[in-house]
Image (tube, one colour):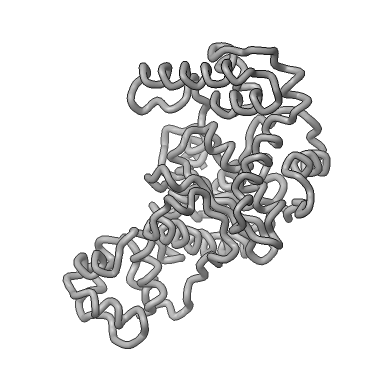
Length: 355
């Protein structure tokens, strides 16, 4: 039994050592001794572990230790509000993603990244430099995930039911990774994607733990999604909530983000800015409980993963076969791949089922 792989599964399910021990019917000290290499895995517990986790027995017998994201190189938003269990669960998802990503890399060549490094300029300048480098000028971004993938960013999804975990990013072997929590609104996910891009571009060498890193990444995301010149050319003074709802789709941002950007650039007075927030809160309060954004955008997904999965189907490798080969639950892989393989009613999955 590989203690590192057992620990990964414990963390992926957000279990403390006590909670994990209770599921296996043993005491906490037994798990503590096993994870530190001082004791053996309890007899008869492997079947229980496989049953509740969905991981195959062979996964735990593999002597190779999984690679976790380096915590020193990971940018987590809302870190002060994020519990250790939720953070560890997201990092364990990253370790599973690395295993799958390495398997895919043996089969397919994907675009190398062409991100710049802009450590010593303002967030707005960094956003402008990257837009220029990518040749997209001031035009709005229709699909954030597709744009990032086209420029070599490896994007995985997270299905974490917590309001404190939006996304995280890191560099690994000179490859940029972004993990997006897909339980958020589409507008929030787009903002999160470019927030993490800001970390990758501005904080690769100096890290993202310093006091201003989150504000810098927020400013980068706003400037990248809504370039100042385009924003001012397309808006007018004193826009109301109705105006914001009608206009937000140009940049694919939330009403709140657009309201903030317009106020920052002097398009809204303090009074109109506050009035719009009050009106927005009332608007959302009158909507169904789960509504979090007026006139919401559809969620984005990954075109690269769709293309890879389609080709694998053609070659006789459905996701179920890949999961069996890697000894990973299909559900864990599906959660990392934007749910592409789980919804047979989705257009891309109808294509997959016909292959």
